[in-house]
Image 1 (cartoon, helix red, strand yellow):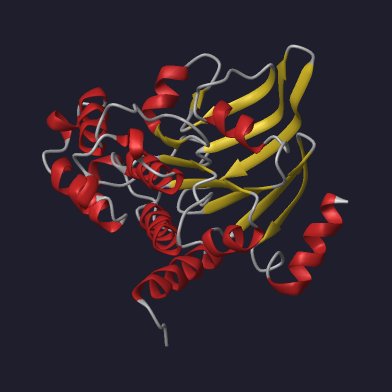
Image 2 (tube, rainbow, N blue to C red):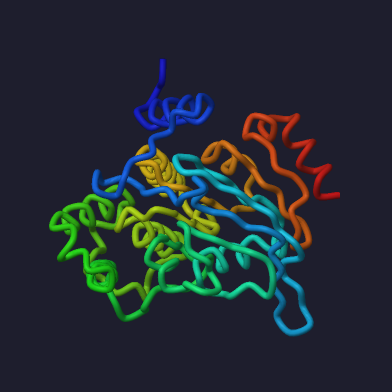
Length: 274
């Protein structure tokens, strides 16, 4: 028996991932259109250099539709830089990166249309309210033309993340956790093909963590590809079925969430970081 609806949803989603029955629906049916090769995210030998600093030194990654993958590592491991490349914000110095069938170097705008991105820092306008943020996002993505029900979904998300009472208050006075919650809401509003959540649990209270977990489950259930970067191993294995560990800008291991769970998983993780 599941103790809460959230745990029940996550258990069913995990069962679909293990059996390979995760949903793969077309965009016309409100789901996700897979690229021809079947992998919404493919990264091969990614290198990213900022001046003399090489932030990413050769990352390989494949993420599938209907699944959630964690990028796990300490600060400075290259997680956020990798996520920025996947979001079409930072171009790769070398290597091959495709997101939703689009090359991030040649088609950055198409990538930005396909993804929902919660950055690790920033992204909010201090003098704008949460509702104004959502209205702007809807206009940019033309949701008023393609999805008449976007306003109700936006209201439901604000309530789920306990931001309904501050929907018309400017974000300048928001706590760090409130800002993180709003960033997740903005990322999931348009039900993207690829959902990128960079440190979504940082400074967030238990209610916000549970709301974010539910948003990840919802995205997986409709067939989206989800990537979550975090330095928190316990939350990584709870949110995702696959964990890729980064260290020093490179991938050092990929394991199942089961292998990275509990005391054995903690020991294995510490060993990968030493």
